[in-house]
Image 1 (cartoon, protein in one colour):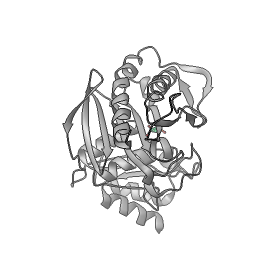
Image 2 (spheres, rainbow, N blue to C red):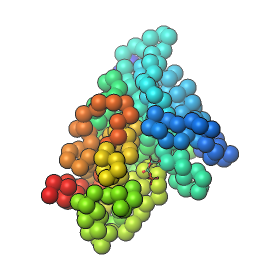
Image 3 (tube, rainbow, N blue to C red):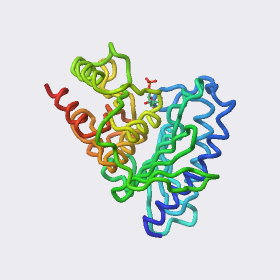
Image 4 (cartoon, rainbow, N blue to C red):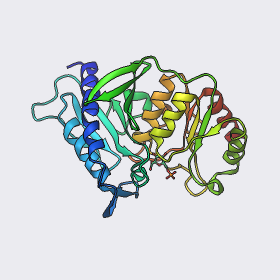
Length: 291
Ligand code: P6P
């Protein structure tokens, strides 16, 4: 099986599972007593349910040999008993990004990176990336072969609604995570400039906030914090796949110094400062941090 066919199967499987994730949300906002994920974050029953659904479905896709999740300590070998002919894909997934938004009934998502290399993989080794947005409409945004396509998920099927998606040239929105007193001075000063130019859009789930940037133009960041120099977001499950999508849409990404796709993977759950959006704002950010 060629890698391309296997990528199609992975994306179609993610789309097919999405309605079941959404249907499982009501009644699962409570946290799993005393359970934390490898990043030390409290896990909700919804996180566990989404992770199990994706693991079962993606682990059975011929051509997928590795599965890694934000909710699991280590990479899982899912080479099917029959052995995978041809493709040897690795899938890194954040099954329910922003699950704390379930409490307030706000947008959440699923983020997927597909590599043809063992995990943890560099963003440059991603051959496709996608996110599902559980908004008023369930949509799926996919980057592969240098272009971005948005689909509506209808009954688990992918219906293309926009091809060759690109960031609008005139930025409108920004969203920055972390607490203002915890921002290093250089980022703080940069944010003060940006807020005089753009409108604040921050909803607490990366997929929803990034989709605002992709729709209207602007910048999303979860920066390095004084209390957390590597920021909060994970390279494998959030930073790299989102950067793949935004860069394919004509935008830019940065860890503060370089594209997130160039960041050296050292650990499956490594955190990285994340800045993605219109190139001009990402360049200004890097200049501000280099002062
Ligand atoms: P905060 C969700 O928990 C997440 O990982 C991202 O989806 C989101 O951008 C960020 O953390 C929100 O963090 O500190 O605003 O709750």
